[in-house]
Every structure is written in structure tokens, then in C-alpha cells.
Length: 199
Image 1 (cartoon, rainbow, N blue to C red):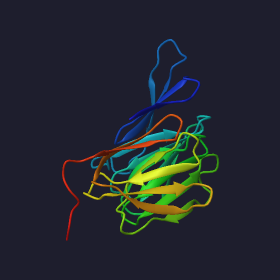
Image 2: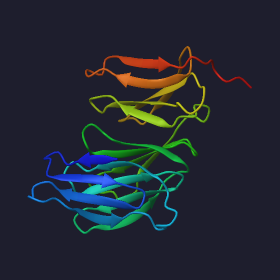
Image 3: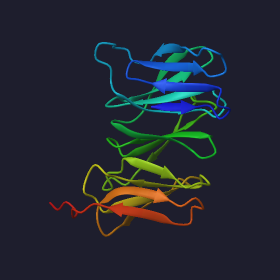
Image 4: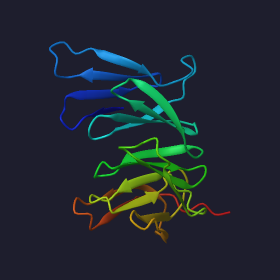
């Protein structure tokens, strides 16, 4: 995965073993490598990276871990913050204030303050029967939609960011994708051809 700082001066590229910082303002860019995996021989898959808007921190989600890698881009140091089991999605809020991670294994949301990532995160319990693992913010950042494409579930949930309330809702068929209009007024749910899994 690759991300850019809003001023387009820095590109951040994540691989399983390293985070590469590329200064795009120099005539001959070359990467500065920061090791993000403890085990270089068998590293966990690095699936997502998000950046603080000011370019201070990068957050890396690794498959199958119980930690979130936080990289201080000024000091080039890495810390690992505990999160729930089996993190499956990592998103930056539209305002850039929060890095939000979905823990499918524990059915929780972990919300980190991007400006103070080492402060205790807010942890929000999700409905246990939702099997929720993916998150999409509405454009204003006031709400987000949670859903799953990993199981044949016809449920999704809406999360009110201010109150922390999570409401589980039903759909007609399992979800293959969710899209929100630019105004945030409409959600489109794309369905699978298969029906809901039944016991």
C-alpha cells in the first residue's frame, strides 16, 4: 500500500517487512527504510497504512496480529500498540483526527487519536452477531458504516461517532461492497448472488 502526505512532499510505501519513506521534493528520490516487522524471515502481511495529515505518524495494520504498528516519521521509530484480535480494517477519519481499527475477532472498534497515538484509545463494543469487519466513514466523519464481506451475512451497522452508539440493521442479501455518496445522504449496498448462511 502507498499513501501521500496532503502536501505531496512525502510518499509512504508499506511492505511486509519495511515502511519506505520517499521524499518527493529532491531531484533523485530514494527510500528511507524503517523496519516494521520483528521477524524479517516470516513477517505478518502488512495490509494497510494510513498517515496523520501532518505527516507525523504512520499507522500500519498487519494481518493476524493483535497490535497496531505506529511509526514516528520524524524519529523513524516504531511502537506496537495492543488492539483486539484479528484486525481487519484500518481507516483514517475524514477530518484526519482518528485512526479507527476494526477488530473482527473481538467485535470491537479501536479509535486512536492521531495527534496522540500513545494515549489510551476508545474501545467500542460491536454487536456480537454482526460479524463486522469493514468500515466506511461518511464524508463528514459524523457516522460510519460497518459491514462484512467475509461471511454471508445480511447485516450492517451504523456507528454514531459522537455518541458511540452502534445500531445493527438488516438487508435483503449478503454484502459484497458498500459505497457512500459524496454528500453522505445515500448508501449503496452491493449484494452477493448467494443467500444468507443458515445454521
